[in-house]
Each structure stands twice: as structure tokens, then as C-alpha cells.
Length: 325
Image (spheres, rainbow, N blue to C red):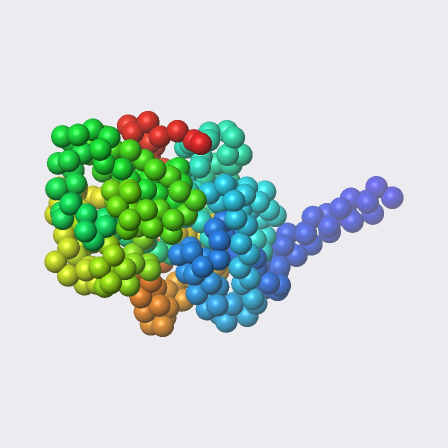
């Protein structure tokens, strides 16, 4: 009797790994859920949907975008961190992935690196510095000279505490040794409205959606946060040329992560699908039209990027004294 039981157990332990391998090889056999922690229509959501459309065709299963908004993407991030690591729930994350942990500590309830299996960095979204068109500050130097000569006379808007615009302005202030006042809003749109009115001095803004305001002379672009000048804004200097070397690294990023423990073969399959989409001329054009810089790297490269990104923002947050709301 003991021999029969032992034989049955041995057979079971042999079948289970084989079943797991077969399931991994067949992946995906059902729709993949892509959680995005921001509202529909924003840069992360728009690019996530472009990617999901092409991945669905490549993988043979729908990649379904679900917006889990709230708390600067914290709700979506926590959900994916606790999800089953089978490749059917992934996170389309942004800069807040690291920042939430830095600001909230253990209250964030996840570790940006240990709680996830990085899949790929998808794109960077360079920021531009804008002020009202009729602002007295015609150059970035004008603005910073005023900030240095009259502390707290210069204010800057953002879509919220700890967001990309807040962090970029705080980093610039630290590098320039200029004290400025942060004015957070509930989104980029209301912040930009106050900048255009002149009630707020300036803000860092995603390149997406501002061309019309520039053309209609509602705002002036003082500098671009990319490594090279942007053809969309002829004659506008880069931050590097304005005395802020390496500032392009502050560009908000977007990328895909799976829960920690997701089989490497599944991570690699998702990564291959992303790379295929990122090589598609249509995808490249749509992203560039949105002001995004397509990337598409390996899981190992994305992990290395996340570590360096966290170290960079940790220094900025500590130097500027940024606190959680």
C-alpha cells in the first residue's frame, strides 16, 4: 500500500511542473488585464491603449486596459503587486511608481523593485517649461534671476504633490539654488490655466497638448527637458544648454511591470510583444506625435533603470524637503 501511495505522489510531483511549463508555453490563453492608475485620456492612458491594441494582435488575446484611478496611481499599483503572478494582470506604470514609495514609506504597501517583475520601459515623456505668453519672463534666466533676487516671488504649478511637474521644478530650484513656491492643483489642465492667466509664474508641462496654446500665443516655452532641441519649438533651448546638465533624466517615464514571481518565460513573451509594437512605424509615429520618446528595452535594463530612477528622486526629495500630502 505504501508503495502505491509513494508512486502516486511521485507521479503527481512530476505532472505538476510539466503542467506549469505547458501553461507557460501556451500563454496567453485568456485576456490580459493592463491596469493604469490614471484617468482615461492622459498621456499614460493614451500610450497604454496604443500599446495594448498592438499587443492584442501579436499575442492573440485581448490586452484590456482598466483605469484604477486615485492616490497618484497607488490604488492600481497595490492591486497588481498583490495579483496572481501568472501574467494576466500587469501594471502600466509611471514615475509615481518610485515616488509613492519614497514619500509614503511602508504606507505605500509595496516595494517598487521587489514587489514586481519589470517587463519593459516603454517611453519617456520630456517636459517643457511654460509661462504666460505676456509674462515678464522671456527666458529661463529671467525667471531664475527673479527667483534668486526675490525668494518666494516665483510660483510654479503642478498636477499634485510628488508628481512629475513638482519634482522637476523642485530639482531645478535645488540645482539653481532658487527658492520658489509650489502651487499644486488637481490636474495639469487647471494648473496650466492659472499659468496662462499669470497668477502662477510657470510650470513644467508634458509636451502633449500644448502646441495649440503656443500657436495661439497663450503660453511661451522657456526650455525643453529633452537631450536635444525639439523641432516643435524652434529656437527654444534645452535644459542642458540652459545650465542644467542631465536634466533630461527627469522626464516622466512609462513602462510595464508584472507581479513579482511571474515566470520569466511569460515576462519575456510580454517583453517581446512590446518590442514588436515599438518597432512598428505606426506606433512610433503616434507616440512621437504625442511628444513621447519610444524606448522598449529588456527586463534587466528596465530593472536597472528603476533602481537608478529611485536613487535620483530620493536625492531630489531629500534635498528639496518634499513631503507627502
